[in-house]
Image (tube, rainbow, N blue to C red; front, side, top):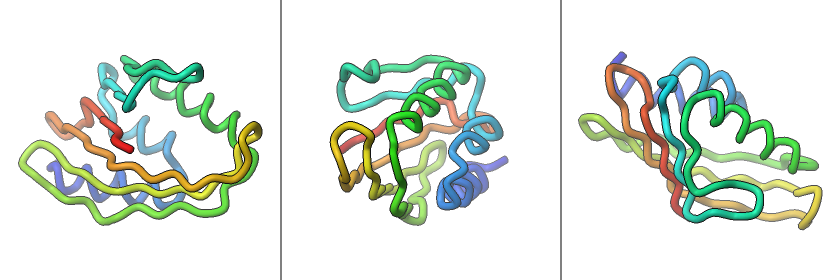
Amino acid sequence: MTTQQTASRLVELCRSGDFETAQKDLFSNYAISIEPHATPAFDKETKGLDAILEKGKKFDSMVEKRHGITISDPLIATNSFACIMTMDVTMKEGGRMQMAELCVYEVKDGEVISEHFFM
């Protein structure tokens, strides 16, 4: 799969809210996920697909309601792509909030090997 194909599929799945399928289908078993900083809920770096999937489940457990999600078309480079994701969610603790982040993905051999989020 090319970087363009990987990016298009990831954006398609994420727009439908199917983050877990995107990760299972497109991420390397050795992928790394990097947050802007560590928080009480999440480490700065999460290594390995199983840990990334668990991180997604943990985030989902913190969300009371999803009101909307928007993901831009991807901007493609040779082995990487970026998109902007905005989410309107009500957290179980913290109330309703708008979250926006730049999501940068690195691709090798048709698989995502890293994701890096910038707020």
